[in-house]
Image (cartoon, rainbow, N blue to C red; front, side, top):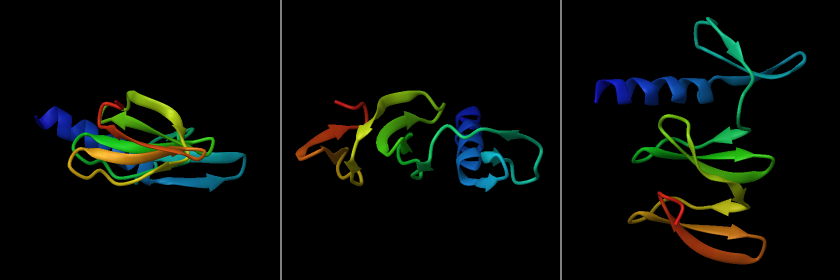
Length: 101
């Protein structure tokens, strides 16, 4: 369990400390120990082991290891309520669970 918490913390910190520097966006640790290109434009907090991430204006879903569960394809994603969230692609609306189904 402790390794999972550490992975969650590290991934959260990577997503949290994104900012722009000359030459483009970068991601750095709080103590500037490393700098890497960001994977996503925006990320929501992890909830029950998953988080929504935004890339090229679309939302997808990752797990705590950073593995993409649902590729970024949604225009809108709502909060999870009872294990499901409302999503839209264009004018089509629906629901998905934490597995993207």
